[in-house]
Length: 318
Image 1 (cartoon, rainbow, N blue to C red):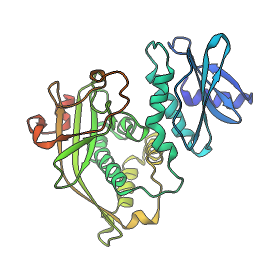
Image 2 (cartoon, rainbow, N blue to C red):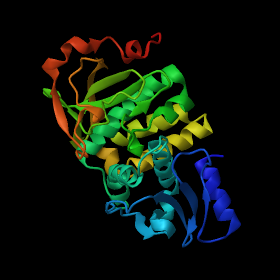
Image 3 (cartoon, rainbow, N blue to C red):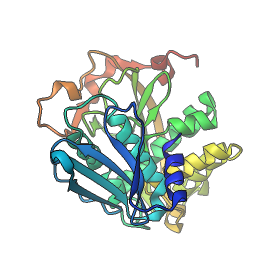
């Protein structure tokens, strides 16, 4: 049973405040249910969990339980974000799939990564750097992922909007997409997990993306036109189309007139193979207590890692 199916079953019962364990085999006690008419997940912790981040669309509360345990209850407070909340729960399930001394710290750290998405004001325009990043991901999806893997597989692999460590996670490779300026001399790494090995080859796919606000130009070069192109590429597969629209919402995109006059210009794309000696900071290498890290890698320091295509890193044919 999927997380979405479990939530629908809980809603169908009509019993408010009742929780059911996600899986008897999961090493952490995770429970799904409905509380106050809203979807919720409860995480049982041995000790009081750390103070949760402020999340605009989720309510997070730590409650004492019997035998000295604590319950960390996370409840969705906006019904228009049920799909995004399902991905949060899936992420928490994955993050606690190994036995932990106490899951509270891990769960709070994961929620902090989701903070930006859930704190976004409804109907807010994306900022320029967000448009550039999303445009690069859409470009990779339309020009690289879909032609190679097909609409559904490529759409399902697009996990960047859900605060995943890498933007695309295929069965044979993880791809981190970077939007750079033409004169950019470094690549920004936004978290310790972004280039941390997770068992698959890692590739950085970097493309030049420039944005001009409120400029006239070819209507085919607008941000809105790019979104329409991606939607058209998955239109014949209902599941893929739904996934793309869900990911766009998670990224903070909605159809607006302003995006019809936002020009996106693409430059060349390059690929880097993130091998063992690639200059990076990985989560296991940092001292306990360091929660996050943002750093930049000089482009001149990684020229030896250039490859002809991200497909080479994946070990698949062009």
